[in-house]
Length: 332
Image 1 (tube, rainbow, N blue to C red):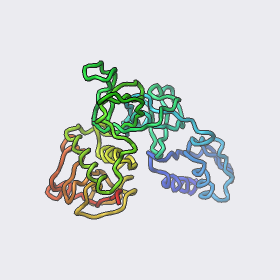
Image 2 (spheres, rainbow, N blue to C red):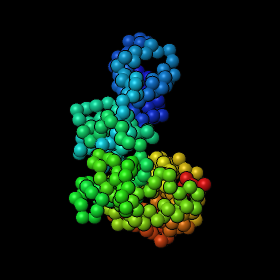
Image 3 (spheres, rainbow, N blue to C red):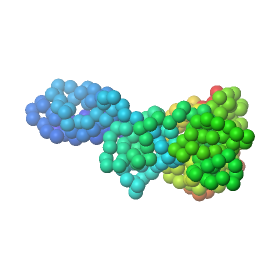
Image 4 (cartoon, rainbow, N blue to C red):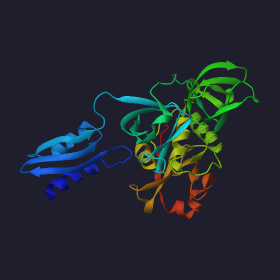
């Protein structure tokens, strides 16, 4: 029994990224060489890994639920923002946030909550009433102002119907003077200058780096919020992901994922490079990410600053200097 448990645990370690994997397996019954397992996994490939790890065993996997089996069911975020949680319920840890229009693959439902998978593989529990089975219009623009009031009519003294948060993809279906009508959970009007056309995103490396720094400084003073991704409150990796999204580059959600995804670079850094920090300079324990403003100057959402702020030289900040692990570039 112990060797079987050890083998199952070894397979589990290969699928232990909790925001990307589901691997929950227990032994239900063992009779001779016949082993019945129960639990749930994300993919059928998880079962293949189990079979390979337990050669010679007659496996009964009927008690194991495969979450991504059969035809996928999709829903889309149908409010301007909703939270993503580690477990079903408002009191569970917030792991991220989802702006309007994000596509969600529904893996499992519990009452009014669903375990969802985003297109990048990121997992969490979302509140079903804030989603819709109806796909929104194809986006044409990104909101780039940290927060834009969504107006009922194209004039500054009109009624505010909602708020549009920076980084949200929207479809523009009309323009009147300085105003654009966007289609989202509540249609309304925003200033044209507060949107960036998807066909007008910066393309050159220099233009992208310059735009990232310009956008970043618009968020100075936004408070730190674990799992936050917007001007309502933002964490370090959410800030980096948002800035890159606004120049048309998709990044993974969490800092350690971003570190692995980029091209390794060392300081002094170029503007827009991501600079990472970990415990005892350990590259396996990335705990913080910042955005380089060039050289050793950084902008980041930091608990020590309680939000987005600039450090002129990270080498002069002891806790940053002592935990620096390296950088990653996503712009060639």
